[in-house]
Length: 347
Image (cartoon, rainbow, N blue to C red; front, side, top):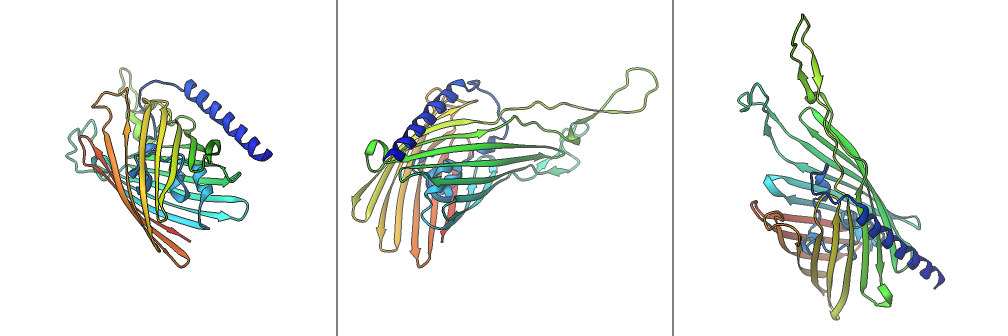
């Protein structure tokens, strides 16, 4: 009991520090670097509107709240997720987590964007008639760690390396995620609380030979020379999130949950997410229906292009292995809707 009180006190202190960080963050509305860090992954949690900060667990929690990987229900779990994003961009994501005895749970993740070929234009060829193409490369690698501190509290973090290449310029940076989950809040079984601080790191800027320009001599006899444009640096899209969730049982073979979360962005308006799921177990088979939505009260209607979400899930527990397939749909203004499908294997 004494240890639980200590952990609960530390958790409350972390919450206070988190809110203080949120208040101290730069509230400008502007352009951030590495915005791909905010692209969600995984069919289960996205189908609930991304509201599952307090309840996400296992391999999928690497993105939503790294504390959740400490609640891994098996010795190891792997996931592959594919998403059709906006403007014909595809997002591929893969991750694996494994439990190492009393040390905790370690995970590795990789996210890559497939933007496709883009015509190369220059000041000499502004229409791209030369037929040259380039394909931007955006990739994020993550190393995660999480563990249960008590039966009620789990904590975790992720170290991420971000790499962006556009033709002959590139940028590399790093970011950190930290998260905490508290289950059985205020002694209520099923009541869950989560806090996460994500994408904390130094500014990023591009560099490379693509920034070289031909210098024009204004006088005298001078050889042709080049100069390099100095690219501006931009902040990472840091966020501070807090979420509440509740999980209950409607019947012996039926479970349900509701979730909500609040997101404070350093370079965007505050966001609120709500969602839930209902699951039915039939021997080794599990079926889930999910739904959710995101709202940005301060934004103009045209600024928030993402709408409601819904999805389904199918799970099968075989001998020594657990197989899950999850699908999520998110409506989008001006673009085709986002579709996500993810496959998970637990061992």
